[in-house]
Image 1 (cartoon, one colour):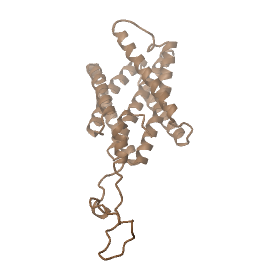
Image 2 (tube, one colour; image 1 turned 60 degrees about the vertical axis):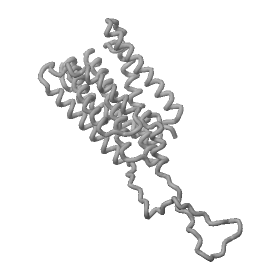
Image 3 (cartoon, helix red, strand yellow; image 1 turned 135 degrees about the horizontal axis):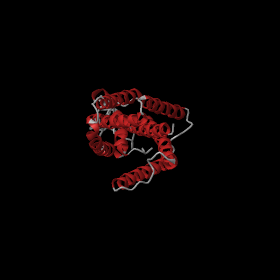
Image 4 (cartoon, one colour; image 1 turned 180 degrees about the vertical axis):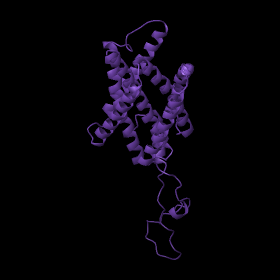
Length: 278
């Protein structure tokens, strides 16, 4: 089954199929033993019996993915806390570089054929800087820090809800579902990019403002970000079933982390709108 994540493209299939080797052939016939006419014994001199060629590959498990996801999340939280602790607006200069570097790293990890733990951890640090500055900004707008805790609780509530729905097979990553969701995600990112460029030139579309259009767009983003977990869960399940090497658990953790951060930011934005109406 092809994966919806570009990071699990050709390398995903090759890693899954690369572990299969032909079985040890029939032993050569003893000298002088009678043979059946027309059916010579098959013998591959290049084959290696299993006892002499043990596989050193460690395969990905669910525990591996959970562990790597926990590590990347912890790194993100620590980086965010460090930026939050900076006095005043000292860390504001890090926001734009964090966005640009995080975008580049995300693309490199997504389209790389090999899983790279160092890049994934670096991405978690960069995104932690971004999350810390965004959280501090929205907390200052709301006037109190309780909005951050509310956003964190809501994010993990949605995450576990989607995990339950996927486990219960209420929502499945069918080919039609996958194609449709990827198309919607691409459209949303294109709209956000266009909106960002227009805002740099002084045009305000209202998509990210406290208004009806901003509410609708934020809710759509939250729903799509939540549904993206279904794709991540399906990729993890398929990776374990197909016997991917253990290092690909870092790539799976990266996919889950991206969805978590996106969902958190969108929930935080919507909560700030609601707090502004009080």
